[in-house]
Image 1 (cartoon, rainbow, N blue to C red):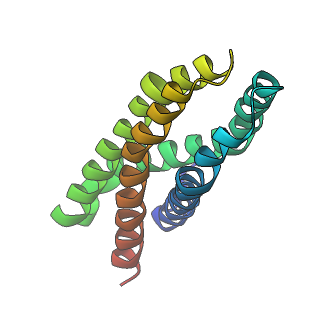
Image 2 (cartoon, rainbow, N blue to C red; image 1 turned 45 degrees about the horizontal axis):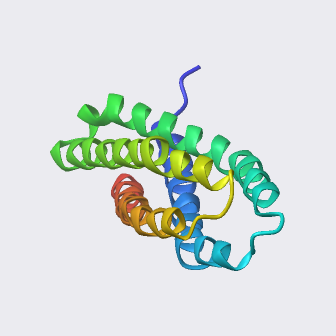
Length: 150
């Protein structure tokens, strides 16, 4: 099945912008509010948070990654600037995934055993990496989409 590049660009921009908005919400609202949950029931809260968050972000992250890789494979057809943005976007996505699975997931695992203010602070502080990387990706995805449309 050969999906047109325009469709891939739209899917890429939508999934990336969705994740950009979501990560800002998580960074500014959701993660800071975790400190207010309290000790009683925190383990149940954290496990439910991990399960429910995975249901929302998992499919979107996979769509974002797949569309980014397809665009990278097709980048040579669209000139040097497009190719640079495709490579930059994939590099930023690799940073997001590395941070997610090497830093944030283990911190969530530690929090699932009970609230720890130090671990929580580390989660909030280290999540800025993903927040800024996804923000840059969102901008790149919109520039790529606008460039292909223009």
